[in-house]
Image 1 (tube, rainbow, N blue to C red):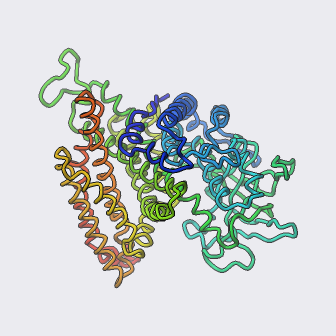
Image 2 (tube, rainbow, N blue to C red; image 1 turned 180 degrees about the vertical axis):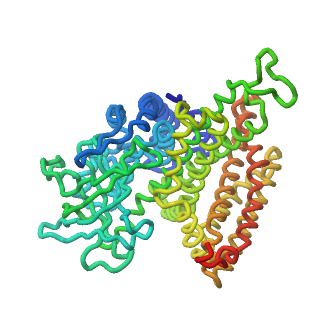
Image 3 (cartoon, one colour; image 1 turned 135 degrees about the vertical axis):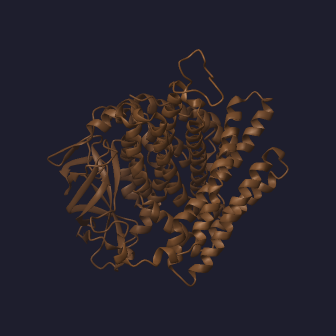
Length: 598
């Protein structure tokens, strides 16, 4: 069993000192009670659940996997007990509407909790985050009757939730779905169709499963404008909110054999005239579902951060203890047969790359989650509108860039351990397999890049990016006299200029050649992600200097963060130059080759 230690110090520093989150919460009436002390207490308890309940059953869950027989799915040994501990602690309803038994906590807080849970046991955590997303969608768009009937049990953890979008012939192109919804005389709908890749579609952790299903009404317009969203319970529920003995006509046809997340049930779900209820407006299902998708995509970026942190901890500990070779300048531990791996420059390169990207990724997740919370809780309409635009810009980057860098960190950690990283004992090969899916589901990262480049940048003529750039400019202006940051600011300013120039170039080229959008999309996402990581590190470094000054130089922790930030600026940020060249190369070299020449 691998040992996971929740990075509470890092989280507290980012929340309190870098982003002043308690002050943000104090400025919004619905979050005023979420104080620094309450945040600390909640994170401490969540860390205990992750380390003591989830991590111990992680590797066993991977080895055992889920079992499927006669339409029923059994989760791995230990998962049910871990889920009972999770639900009894009130974690299922953490961000839920207090009117229906939720605790009303902000997403920013739950994002840090999810990171710890994903790090400790990704398969288990997938059962819980889908419930959170389904509850959010139902609370935002469901009728009062549906909310009263279903939300209390979802918030208590007695029931769980899913989202059922994908069909075998229609992956990202949801406008092609064939699932049908026929109106019935009692106001419900008869749902017929088959869905694939349904996380937590069937399992034995809860007494009921509430599916949110995309389907088309008989008179629906063609394409994505003709999709509606329906709530379909596994067991029918009476007017008092209790399950009946009647099993709905929804069943699991099989579960997938997968590369990773073996303890998570990924199901084929069949709806054979199942009773369902409309959520939101008819033919407005795609927009309704996207309430859930922004939160779920943030969670997938957080998954990358979590698995990267777990992998980094293993690699760091190994490098500090494993004796191999001697330091370049001579033995650092002459009394030993060899020096620890940590003395070797290339091992340090791998560890520092992991650490630099993990800290920046966690900071970006906090930054993006704060915009979701402002959009949800802020009393000022203008502030909410600005946050909505920043969410639209930030979420595809956070999802894709954090999951990409998270996977990279898992691979680097494996490399630090060499052969020991390749065998199952150390858990790193599992982390790689579990991290890989975050780059694929909830919208593959290439789709996130296309959305960012096309809808969020070219179509908006750069409006969303200008909001971000204005915030960055304001921050830089406030720190222009900070001599200790000037070297880092100068390096960052070059990266920021590359981003501004590339944005203008692609918007201009796309007017005459639509292929320029797709050609630039992924390197552009990488460039914006790198710029955001640089911005996060500037804010982190500034906070470190403030802490060191206030503590009179006694903060070894903050000094270590400063040196990690300097590494990022010196060794990782320069990649912006090559990304700019790639974007400037345009679409010709991609589109010139004919299909039959591949």
